[in-house]
Length: 149
Image (tube, helix red, strand yellow):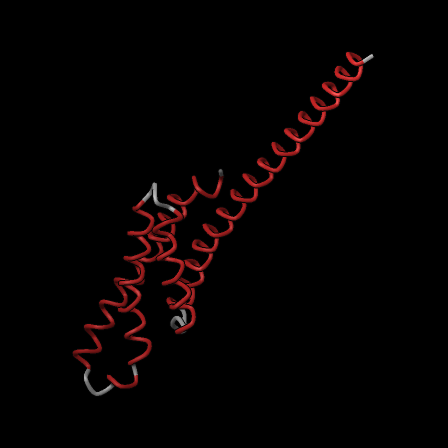
């Protein structure tokens, strides 16, 4: 009779351990999927803000809030895309070139009397704006791997 109780206790303990192991495994999978989703969302935010930054920059000029948000996402990209540092480099170059475009848009009225300086700034801004289109396509290609996995 004692043997039967021991076997019964062993079977129940084994079943409980198996059930708990299954629950732990399910939690592990859920956490992995949540991590993947969180990484995807943060990486997509970098891409999305970059597109908005480009659109506003080449339109009427990027607002201070958008510039701050772009800088924040650019710096986050250093860690989010650590296996592909060229993404951060490209975003950093976008940031640098944005100064040329914003300088013309923000200081146009102040430079009306100085045509030579305005022409130089306009030339630099045009070159930077022309660079942005292909750069956005390059960014999309570089980020594609991270956004499709």
